[in-house]
Image (tube, rainbow, N blue to C red):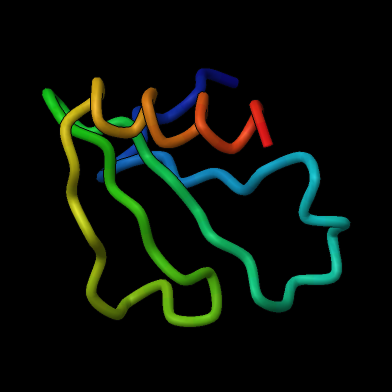
Length: 64
């Protein structure tokens, strides 16, 4: 069986989310940006930031 090409962005949760399914943030690599959304509202709005802004944000969390 061949894999079907996916439609739309591939959203993912952090491995640190604990798998509880509550209060999670999901991110997706979009063409030249990163999408950020609330996992409880997958059809709701999302925020879009540039890759370098997301990388700086994640790096700042790791240093705290």
